[in-house]
Length: 203
Picture 1: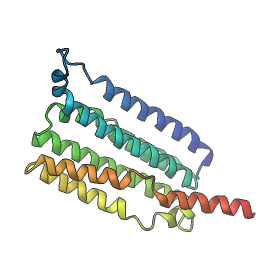
Picture 2: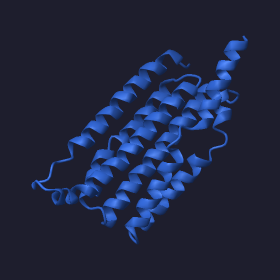
Picture 3: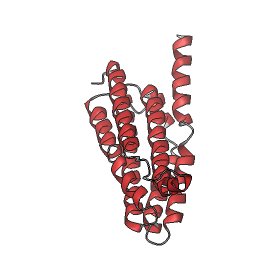
């Protein structure tokens, strides 16, 4: 049994968790000991890692919002799948801090890419769980049938993990590429929402 009325509560809870994650990340930024502009140079890797993670959290927040709106409802499976996603996202501040302190090191870079891979997998699990709740003929299920970005992103993350031990710069570039792919909210959800609104208007 699905409970579409719980979707608002689930989204509000998720928004709160994501807000806390961003807050934890920004608290890790510490001012330099010096008082000149040159002293800020040592903070650049930390700020860069924070900015990249901030963008990723923003991408998940934006796409999560559209996905929940487009889905036909939620049930217990979807709620657990959502918690599973939030669990991996909650580890982003840790990997961000380690990467910021060691921007050219292989293991911190690989772990950062690995966590993003686990985030992506958890997002896909939530997406397909919502499709199962909505049903095979639902607009949401049909909308996610074609999922190029969802399929190519894990592949790029796996490549980023491997390149972390060869060239962290290439690994970082692959991670940024995934962010660029997802910076615009998934249009599949937008089409599903628009189709549903059209159906309501015509009925």
